[in-house]
Length: 154
Image (cartoon, rainbow, N blue to C red):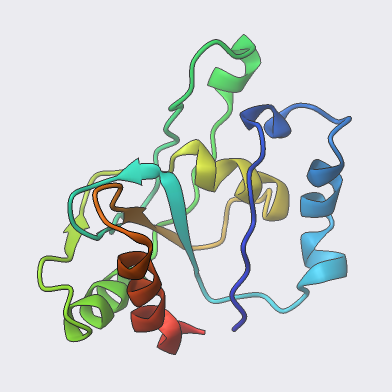
């Protein structure tokens, strides 16, 4: 499968019909990427940990990790299924590549960096998803090497 970089832009992308990116993401399945993936790995800058950590849950909670936005945004839910098999594979690939302290988080849901674009791309919330954290205390080479370690996923 392909790897794509998709920004969530402003969290209001989830409710603001005037944003062009919203329409692009809504047309994702039909016009951009019609092949249905088995699961999706999201790497979001909104989940920071000391070591690479992948969430491994059966069902996601929706994390509303923003403040001062319209109240309707706090009512949005994206209850996508988790992708524990993919999460385990991500963790194992990272460990095999030398990230000895890669971990799984059995509780964390999806932050808005994940669910905002996904709710537009796959509104049925039926696509298995897992999320990988970033390490703000590490440099670009660290994150580049994480990407290299995960290359077998694509």
